[in-house]
Amino acid sequence: QLQLTEEEKRLLAQEGVTLPGDLPLTQAEERLLKKVRRKIRNKQSAQDSRRRKKEYLDGLESRAAACSALNRELRKKVQELEKSNGSLLQQLQALIKETSTKPAQTGTCVLV
Figure 1: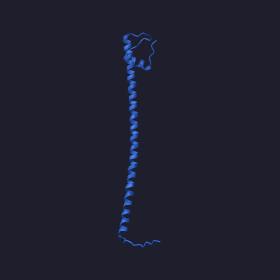
Figure 2: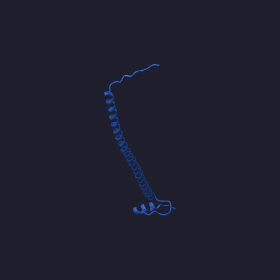
Figure 3: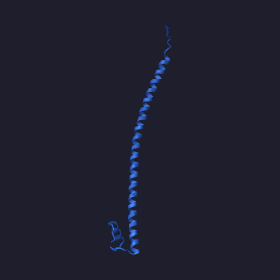
Figure 4: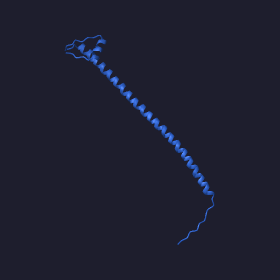
């Protein structure tokens, strides 16, 4: 007996074909059944391909969002470090200026 899935029955009905319930099938009927099964496989393959593409794109979007967030954090950190660096540079320049304007002090060293 010929066992058909619901999808196969639906596609055969769309084609306007009815297959007998018993085997063997004629060559023309076998060709029609192969054609319908190939359409079903192609449809499933296309669905799988679209699903994989969507998963890939979702992954890329989440990675891009994570990279953007990290980029924002790093830019903020760079700004903070540049500000801190500028402040330290000013302090260093002030110390250099302060030490260069003082006269050199002489000291006495005692050796015991």
